[in-house]
Length: 390
Ligand code: GAF
Image (cartoon, rainbow, N blue to C red):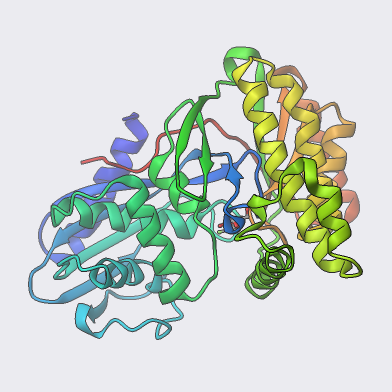
């Protein structure tokens, strides 16, 4: 553990003690993520390739056995929120507390005897930036309760329960990528994940060793209307699968795409969604083989292709994300694309280390002349997944 994360764990533990009057049983951390490639494929049983950020949600937690759940966050103003585990009801909470409470609900619904907890949270994952701040909150609480109640659940199981919390308790129809990334990623690797059965392969991903960098560009456009649009895309994909007679779009082979599109006839909206998902799954497989054969620079054009498909076929981009991609590529980046759900949030830029200053400057200038808010640019180093830190 780095000195700064040890210090963060100490600070969260100290604040817990102030709030609740005694030291926590432990402190846990779970990261946000960026997705290298494989967007809007996870709810189609397809492939994704995220890696964990160094930014984490940190939770100091003590077990309780009296049915009381107390929640507090350093990132949201307000006092400790007190709930009872028996009273947790899906859809009843529209505040931040729905994420940790939803995890307690999902664990209990699955038959795990979680009898209460005191929780204090503090996160460095930027909220609303498409970097999985919600999944980090869910997974850190799931991991803490798993340890404190001796549940013996594996990372992928914690991810599934966290996704259930978000789908049912919070009411957001998300896929499984973000929670699995937070729970299962490893430092120095990207996670090649098959979202159908959650089988996974850790792919070494050390750009610095090859003289490259991966930048995250947070456009600062919060994806506030994303949930309705996200749900519509998901429904459109399900409609496409039903029309094609498959369980999920993952079952449409890339080589049969033209025939499948022809069978969809006049339904242009569904045709576009299907085309994105099938080509995106194929891009993930191409990126995996390029990385495994050491041809990392050749990944760049596939990122741009993925962005074009998300912009034109899936239609989840926005002017700020498109400007990042166009500007970065013009300024010499190897590739760039939006990452996460879209409608705002962040883009990623793959670049030679020596080109980073010029690309960053070009982005700042382009945003200023378009009248957009200054983007927040930082380097993303593949970091560790969820773990106990104290
Ligand atoms: C969001 C969702 F939470 C993920 O499940 C995934 O669908 C992603 O958008 C798009 O790839 O982050």
